Amino acid sequence: MRSAVCATEVVVIAAPDNSVALNCGGAPLLLEGEQVGEGLQLEASAAEGTQLGKRYTNETGDLELLCVKPGEGTLAAEGVALVQKGAKPLPSSD
Amino acid sequence: MNLMMLLEMAAQGFGERVAFVNGDESLTYQQLFEAAGQAGMRLRDGAHEHVAMLDVSSLALPIGLFASAWAGKPFVPINYRLSSHEVEGLVSRIEPAFMVTDAERIASWSSRSEVELEARQTFVDRACKGTSPVENDWPMAPDDIAVLLFTSGTTGTPKAAVLRHRHLVSYMFSAVEFGSAAEDEVALVTVPPYHIAGVISVISSVYAGRRVVQLPNFNARDWIDIARRERVTNGFLVPTMLSQIVSELEGQDSANLPLLASISYGGGKMPQPVIERAMALLPNTKFTQAYGLTETSSTICVLLPWEHRAAGASDDPAERRRLTSVGRPLPGVELQIRNEEGRALPPGQRGEIYVRGDQVSGEYVGRGSVLDAQGWFPTRDAGELDEEGYLFLEGRADDVIVRGAENMSPGEIEDVLLRHPAVLDVCVVGVPDEHWGEAVAAVVVLRPGGEATADELRDCVRNQLRSSRVPQFINFASELPYNETGKLLRRIIRENWAAN
Image (cartoon, rainbow over all chains, first blue to last red; front, side, top):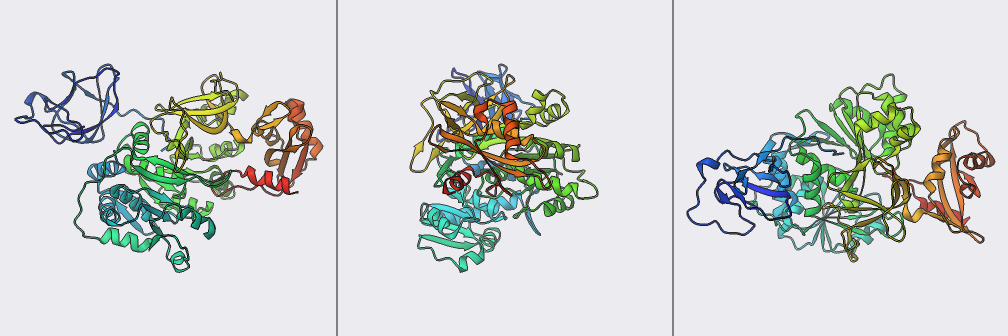
C-alpha cells in the first residue's frame, strides 16, 4: 500500500480480523493501482515521517505495517498514530 | 511483492556497504542493484522462460537471482556436481532457458535442449559494466515464481519445488530485521547455490545488510584461513562441514577465531559429540541450529544460542539431549506431529511433521500443491516434540521400519549404537524379510582402533530398547554414503543390501 500524499509505501505484516481504516499523512492509504484523489495534501499534524525498514504497530499490537519506502507522513489506524516497533531480536538462523 | 523490493531497500538504506566478496572481487549494495537492473533488462527482453545457474557460488549468484526477479522469470540453480546426463534431464524440463555456467562446461556442452549458455564472467561483466537505460518496474504479482529448486532426489527423481515471491518475502519479513547487521558483520557462506540455504543466505544477508564472503569449494583449512583473514563474524555450515572444521581446529595449536561471533548450521543430523566439541573449542561463539526444507523456504525451527548453552551446561540427560533437538518453530510457523490417520499427537509421540505458514510453499511443478485444505504441508520427516515444544527429528517418514505390525524409527536404534564408544557412524534400515515383512539391519562404521563385535552391539541395543529393535543383521563398513550437503543416503544402503 502507498501513501496518497507522500512517498511512503508499506507492506501489511499482520492485520486484525476486522477491517481498519489506514491513513498516512492524513489521507487514506491506497491499494495497488488505486488512483490518488484530487486536492489531497500532507496534513501538518500527521507529518512525523516513516523510516525505511521499520515496523509500525497499533496499541493492541494486532496490526503491523513494514515501511518499504520512507516518506513524510505519519501512519495511522482509525485516526490513531501507529508507533514504531523497537527492533526486537528475532529467533532467526539467518 | 518481489524479491527486488528487498534489494531496493538495501540499496537505499546502506548502498555503499560491501554486499558480496568473492576472492578479489566485490560488489556494494548499490552496485548489486545496478547490476541486477542491467542483467534484469536483458533477461526480460529475452525469449527464455527460465534463468538457470549451473555453477559454484560467485558474484553471478546474487546478480542472477535478483536480475531474474527484476525480469519476472524463475531463477533455477542446478547442482553442478550432477553427471552431464542428469543435468541434461533437468535442463530439458526448464527449456527455453538462459543459463549461466563456467567457461569449461560451455566448451564441452553437447545438450540438445533449447538453452542459451553464457559464461559466468561474461554475465557478471555485462551486468556490472552495462549502461542500458533501466526502468525500476519489476512485476509485483506475489504469486509469480521466484525460484525453482530441484530437490536432492535422495528418494528418486528430483522434484522441482516452486517458491513464489510471497513465500520468500514473507520469510524475510517474519524472520529477519531490515538492516539489523552491524557494519563489521561478515558472513562466510559455503552452502552451494542449488541448495535452499544457499539461495536464502543471499536474500537474508541483503535484507540484514550483512557482508557475504563466498567460499565456492569447501575445505576446512581454507574455511579457517578465510575466517581469520576476512574477519568473519558469522558462519553458515552443514553438520559435516562443522565436523571437519572441529577436527582441523583440534589439530592446530590454538582454535583462535576470536571474531567468529556465531555459527548457524543445519541441513542434516548433528551428532551430539561434534556440537559438544565445537562448543568447547569455540566458547565465545554462539551456535544456532536451523531445520527447514526447500518446500518451506528454508528455516522453520531454530535451536538458539542460549538453548545450546543451557543444554550443554546441564547434567540432566533429558536437557542435555536438547543439543540434538532442532529447536522450536519460528513465530510465523505452526507445527504438528500427526499419526498415520492424520490426527495430531501429544508430546513424546513419534509421527510425521506437518507445518503451516506464509513461507510454506509445498508445491511442485507438474504436481501442484500438496498442502491440505487447511494449508498444512506434510514434510515426510518423522519427529516428536518434548513437553517444552522442542522438536526432535527421527529421519524421513519413509524410513520407518515396519517389523510385524510394529513401526520403529531408525533414529532411536542409531542413537543407542552411536553411544557405544567404538562406534563412529551408523545407519539402520529396514530390509525385506519373509517372516516379519521387514527386518532391522545396521551398517556400522567403527572408530579408528575401535573394536566391537556384532553380538556386543546387539546386546547394547537389547539393554536399552525393546527386543524388536535389536538388529537382525549387522555389517561393518569403512564409511557411509552421504551426499555433498551431508544427507545420509539410506536409499543407497537399502539398494546395496538388496543387491547382496
